Image (cartoon, rainbow, N blue to C red; front, side, top):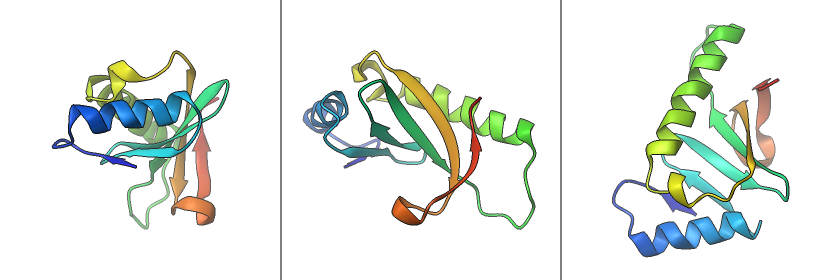
Length: 103
């Protein structure tokens, strides 16, 4: 399910229920893809396209910015009280390669 700026409150509530019940994947446009588990929500950030390799600090900045955007989004206040595990990935879905994981 895709959540973007123009989405209705009904759709935001539906997305929050999917996450709460661990029944689907929700993408917050321009921020992250949220994959819910029983103990945590995996927040996958798509790596910016660039031929330059990134350092640890650059990945941390990506995560900080995404976390801030998630908190201030329409979806943020509706998320269940679970740990957010942040990762940076290259690619999408089953073909995604993990580039960096929050320690």
